[in-house]
Image (cartoon, rainbow, N blue to C red; front, side, top):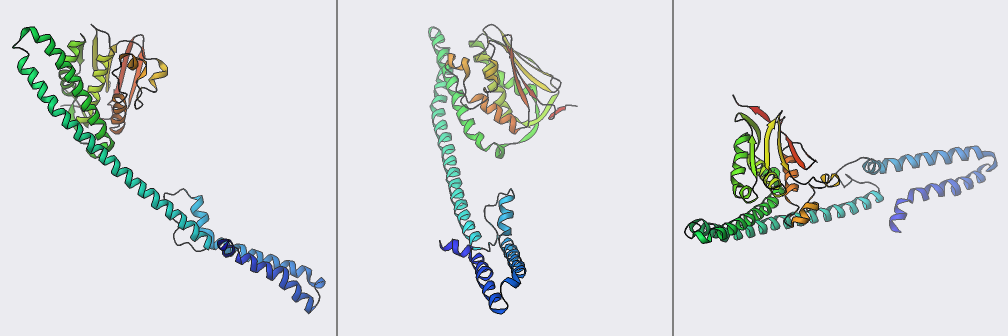
Length: 327
């Protein structure tokens, strides 16, 4: 009530002067009937002056509300209504900033926890892999079992690396290093890393990329993308088929033969945690890998598209803006 009265005091004063003071004064002086037009004129002038003064006092607030701005607070509010409005906005802004700071702190602690946990798990995993490498040739009868254990260790290592990569991708821009990269070299590295996976699934990679193809990008994150795409091509491809990796007209294409991805899933397959029909059947999909691919390629400004038809799936990455021919 107090704020209402403070905000409308000028209207109350004008009302008293116009409809109480003026008629009484005119009646005492010369009769109200003889000066009705003059009364209307004075009342109109006072109303215009009042509206103009109120406009000047609230001009900043009107401009602030109409203008699209990131600043919540009105600079130097004048009217009581402005001051109360600005005070409320300051409270909201302070609350939002506090919540944002809490979220940043929570996100940082979550990243630290994930990173620490992954590294803690990778240490015994590395020991197991070393034991496998040192013993797999000593007992020929246990060779197959050792190979199965090694494959499972590799899958576990891959999942841990994927989790660590997802954690670090929240601050992707701070970890970019753009440099010239030999495309064939990085693809070949990934193929070598997935060698056992190709052998297990009885699939064969065919890399057709010239040695003189260079592009400007981030080596580490681009390798994560190619690793994810090739591992998916193996996971969802047909046995005894091949995964074709080739480069033409500034585009990297990765093609595999397997079940066609339904058209209604292609637009969702890069969403976080979306596994799709095939992922549910296999039961190994996390819905994280292709989300990371989308996030990394978008940050690196490498457009991409996925096409699937007639039991053939192709993902195309456009490097035309980043490509450079070696001399």
